[in-house]
Length: 478
Image 1: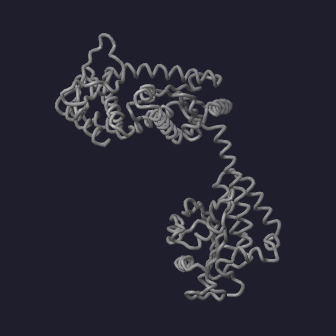
Image 2: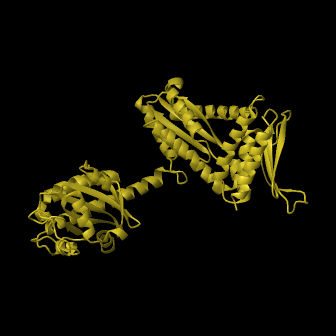
Image 3: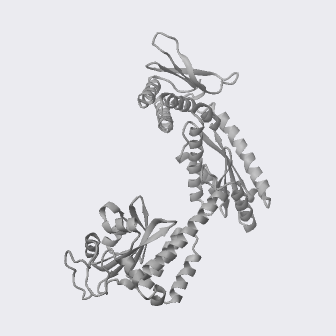
């Protein structure tokens, strides 16, 4: 097959060539690739430049930039995008090194490889041809009706980050030693760009992101608000507060409280995604905000309401929020707009607290009430930490809130004959003049007291639901 490289000798052959890759493709081509990569700011941009440049430099039909993680190779980008169903299917798959010897050697030895399904005369290579390369890669080429393939490792910070994979279709010459040299030079340039982009992303994350939730921090929120106001477009600020975080921290622990804050961040991220150009941020503690630009207040309000309703928080917690818009306030400073949104949030929080005391109407259908209790308490139990007490606390808190109660308790006894003693309490005592009742649920040696509004629907179906939830909380923890 002429000067086609033998398997396992690609890297050595590339180094042995007397001519450098720069001499083959020209200094200008390599300089152009370096300049393109220097302007990249994301991994996706690097992959696109690498693929486009690879097609030009290697005379390939198609280039794939792949990520290798935990000995598994996945395609990041293919250029040009394949249209053949077989190629599309392969581009969407993942490949383990245990199943592909050439990939294993590339990871272990950081060496390039080549494989050929066709000879220089466009004839099929014969089985066991030592010049054809790894049989698995040869079979892949034959399945795609392609002629030749090569791969060069992307070594970032001393480890194999991924690979550049090139394919030539037939009719066409197989890849040769010079092509391997070009691919290795390109891979070195791409690896350097990946390392730079990754470092820049880490620095941006440290400076701009809240470490617990991954949202933007207060500094970024302030900067985005200032930029939005300077644009002259309608600017909205949504201030959010987490109702129930202190209770969750006190009753279920701060790890569960941190999980709750991450759940709030997820809700705000979803709202931000539905409002392109907006920024979700954690201000500090349990305070979050959303800054939008060019979006009408009504649209922002609809998105917030729909998102919060679709993704309720665990453990009976909730989000109170208020919105301030320049369409209402006129031209104001960012600080004033934040203050207006915070005032609206505080009013919403108080209104929600009042509504909780009468959220279950007197004429509520017991079957509907039982269903609401099942949905809320089941979600709370599933989200709770392992262990009987955390699961029972989550059940009690969710059921009490759903039934409009104020306080709850979890008790246990050493034996059926002994009186129970409290192991956890939550909520707050009912206000003076507010009528309430308590439902008692017993399972084995555990007793759960659930607060209920005097107007809450009761009956056998509600009691049965509470009994079943207590059993789920206890038995599921074993």
